[in-house]
Image (cartoon, rainbow, N blue to C red; front, side, top):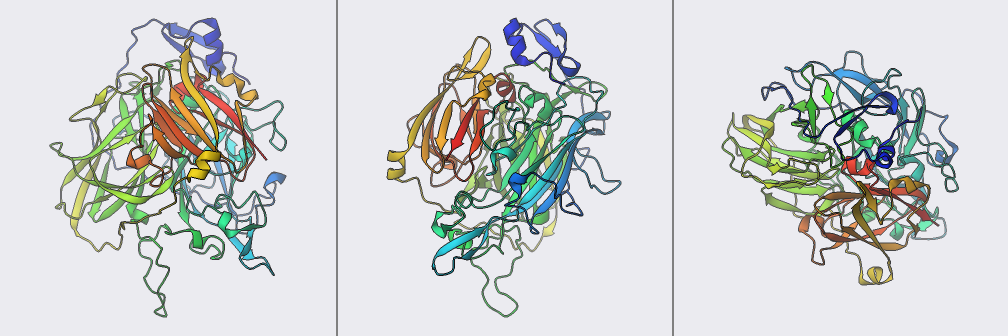
Length: 613
């Protein structure tokens, strides 16, 4: 059933901004409350539960051969198949809270008796390409468009749904380089571009298939290309998937529809196609030997970053709870909803026991509107060093060592390595949030101390640690002067008008037509400007990583600078302008870009762009 009252309907009714408006079951307007409404969650004692670590999903026992015809050129006996379902279930955010009903992604083939989690299963895959040399054409490679991952998402949310959120699904693979039909477009299109399905949103009792090729960009558009065309240095590392339903992304993600997707390089990818372009291989195995059983040196490009039990994803989400443990959410806080309890992997102030060695932590801001300044500190607040190794665009060209904190805005991912070797047995360290933020529009500044979100308990004597963080990770060439000179230039202004958010004056309701049409494999420079006054906007561009050329006309910070890092989300503070270079490769079709303050996204700060041949 389509919603009877949406956010955009309320804009037209003039109801936005006049108090707290609650959306009842199936989109019916239930009640409105006056200004001044405040809420405080029940008190909870910290460090009562261990950090939850979501399990990996189990592949299906047999291939899902009834997938769409559009995927048939990719799928073969090397493809991995998963089935994930969106369900409602009860979980514990804290031992002192009652059970909380959440919506979450669950492995359809989960083992009996497994502990339920608010986070979806963590999918781990290999990223690379296979191919063979074209006979009679030395140096020419014919890629094998095979392997990859096919995920069948089932919508098994309850038919008797009550409260906020909408029980229709479309799943966005955030950070993925995938066909448009597998990206999670926010709404069905009545007249879609050629080859794009009319129906991408699936209702309760339905399913939708998403195919993720996991190929180096530049391989798919031409089935017979030279190996120098593939961009082999663009392997992502920390991705995630979440609901992306038009008008209801904020409510659905807040309710729990999110999960990690981690990518590693495939050391067995065909060497003539993929390996030469990769100057470093992150295979997720710190114990990979320097020599083979015959004493021959193994590939010197293989990195030995902390792996397996020492490679831990952490998602930070703020939520509010009623006395009975149920989630509290204001569906129409259009500045951006803030909860008063920060959860890490779905737990309030958990702890993690760590050995005296190096750990890789993948930090994801999964909040609707909260921005974090994450600091590693001791009990008295003294900062401790971390090493940044990656952004959402994957490994950086080189690590940034001895950083004292990480700014983490919505949808951004930052990877850090923490070395616990020098800390004595029993040492307690904390991840603190030192960013003060009292409203969704923007933070209020960095504090000298902040709430502790996760406690590390160091245990034992120093242990053997085969992992390392070299001085060179994954270097890549900067955008050339010729690429900049020949790029198509566009400007997109993010503004606030008539109580709603717009891009170049347009509401997200204009997804029926694109605001721009880019050409396949032609570079573009997008000028992103925040003209909305006191609000901050983290802007996410679907489908491709960006190269940040300038921020406010100056050289960008090191952790987002072209030649050092790649990004898929850019923070625009008050009146900021960021220029990025982006090239759309391999896949045509409709895509979107939007603010990742999810209330801003649902309040129309989203636009469609198309990629054409």
